[in-house]
Amino acid sequence: QVQLVESGGGLVQPGGSLRLTCAASGTIFRFSTMGWYRQSPGKERELVASITTTSRTNYVDSVRGRFTISRDNAENTVYLQMNSLKPEDTAVYYCNLGATYWGKGTLVTVSS
Figure 1: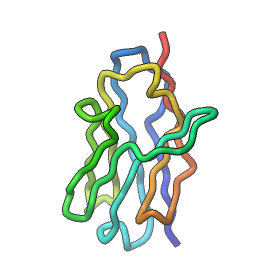
Figure 2 (figure 1 turned 135 degrees about the horizontal axis):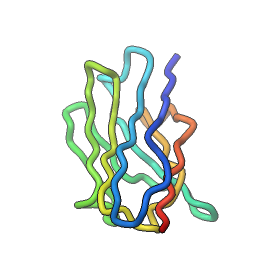
Figure 3 (figure 1 turned 30 degrees about the horizontal axis):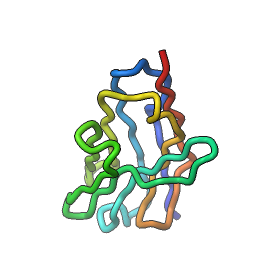
Figure 4 (figure 1 turned 90 degrees about the vertical axis):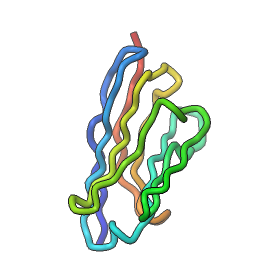
């Protein structure tokens, strides 16, 4: 049984930073590609960033250069460092494991 628990969301002003954390249970974390997705009202869920088992990363164009995904296999944890946040980054952010398992999400609100 895999469980994913996100944390670190909140309210931040434009230009600010947040660090999201996703803690995974189970033993398959180190064998899985991890992803961060987001969904804002009226929009489809989109992939923001992903990281493979060999730490190759990929980003959607709108966050490249501002967000950084990383993982700690010893701690079964994946992170999303978000800098230079913009109002359009406002969304619920979800952690994904292996394109199969989902967390419940954490809300990020960027507003002055």
